[in-house]
Image 1 (tube, rainbow, N blue to C red):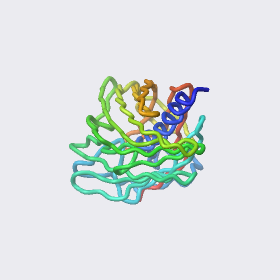
Image 2: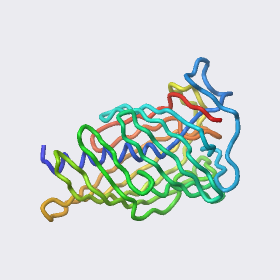
Image 3: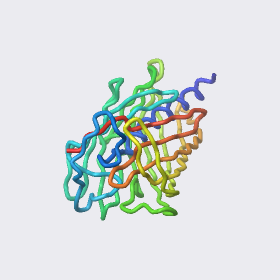
Image 4: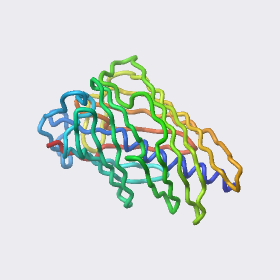
Length: 256
């Protein structure tokens, strides 16, 4: 396979892991399936500007996820801090990678300010590392209200490097998420069975690598379906693109 093509595919895979970590989810006790692993909740929710029925913002809350596909992983998401303008969260991956992200809040609308991390990201996938910094972000990640038929967008520009076989390659990733809420339906994952709104998103990416001073841009389109349970967040995501399918599922959770 052409080296440039291989690099682009790995970059897309690394970006997917980071992007999926932004779509959080957990489940309330009254809808958890019997015997759900480590399912704990107090029934509390966030308040103020960060009060969003699809993502309870509570310090100490955590959710465990499993990613299956060409880049299998597990990760734990947790809320680190909350203030009147936003909050910070952290993802710790099973293979050792870690990322932190900051979000802004406005009337329940939540926007990831740095979708890959708090200012920078480092993701290692099968000996290929990717490190990016957020240069520009606009739009909304999770609206304060999600009803069937609603639409929203978010655009992000990232710059950084890919390291493949010891070679550092400058890279730029520009992507736009366009989402639309679909039907309400039941979805089952390891953590239980939930009533959730299905959200369908298309992510259009432009990944540019500079090799020997020559930039090469490759477009990547990702189609994803996300299930958000009310007063919960994401419980499942499926993503198709760059020649691979990825599924992320909630496996356990804890809400103080």
